[in-house]
Length: 92
Image (cartoon, rainbow, N blue to C red):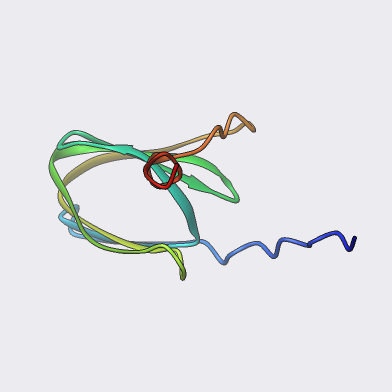
C-alpha cells in the first residue's frame, strides 16, 4: 500500500479595513459564531475574534474562506490537537 503524501496548501490572509478578510490554505473549520471563528491551517490553528462575524464564502476543496464583520484579532495556536472540525463532524 502506497503512503499518501499530503501537500500543504498555500496559506494567505488579506484583511481589508478590519471589516473583510479573505483566507486561503484552510484545512477545516472547527467552530464559528458571531464573536469567534476557529480554523485549522498547516501553520496551526487560527483564531479570529471580533463582533458580528459572518462567513460569506467557504470552499472546502480549495481551502478558501471569506469573513465579514468587525475583526479585532487574529492569533495562531500551535499544536497537533486536530480531532476533526465542524465539517468532519457533519459528515459522520
